[in-house]
Image 1 (cartoon, rainbow, N blue to C red):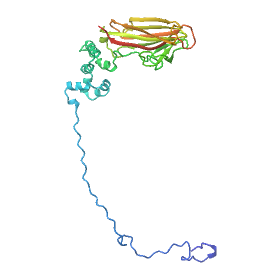
Image 2 (cartoon, rainbow, N blue to C red):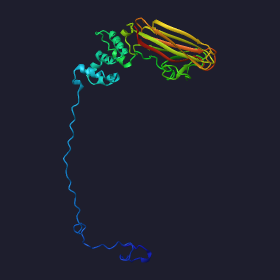
Image 3 (spheres, rainbow, N blue to C red):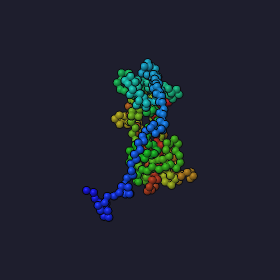
Image 4 (cartoon, one colour):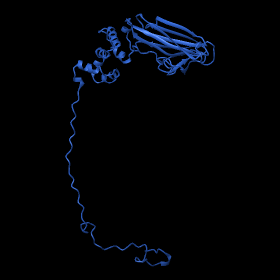
Length: 326
């Protein structure tokens, strides 16, 4: 049954030739779809030349330092920085580990400094080495890595890190860190600790063995401990200052000490400088055997009981170990 598309042509089928929706008549041409049948030229494919595979260059033979005699390998390793010796070379193999742990390598490293101070340091180290039968690890590893001779052992000496590394006691309005108005010779930072109208104190206890020294060297009597501290005040208000440095043994028994008390009077004669800085120094010589710690403590306040921070200004504190002068 065929249904009509419109009501006016009921019962009548649409004429396929006149109907707009009828598809176009199919072509009965038998032409081929292939180009050669239609007389069109066939495209030529290019001839592909197969290239021979490229040969990779053979890697050169690498130098194996482990094949060197131990004497030559020690000489090579003595030119490597101490940190790389510990964290890289020591992990290569057992042979390298034994060489890095040996005293010979670190003595070679110290011997590279041909200056007068370098020769004196090498002589001091050789004379203070532990006995050969000592089972402890060689102290030269830590000594060469930390370099404690001539280095300031006080951490954060100018307050560039706030109150970090200091044990503090606050008085008045407590400690503050401010900029210096005048430069302090040798200071690593242009900042200082400022006290208030009541005593403010702070302290560091230095473990000399942890800093890279060892008992035989500390007890040799061939080293000095040098102490230095800078303190100052403002022109409008005077200040009081105290310093106490103690040398202690392993049981915290005091072997030697140095103390200083200073008072700066306000309105000094030089009115051109609004600030005044003074230095306090001391050298511990002929140190008794058994020293293991250095206690460094200083304090300050003002003289007029002013609120705020007008007390002593402390900066550039230092504790250094040096070779004793003959």
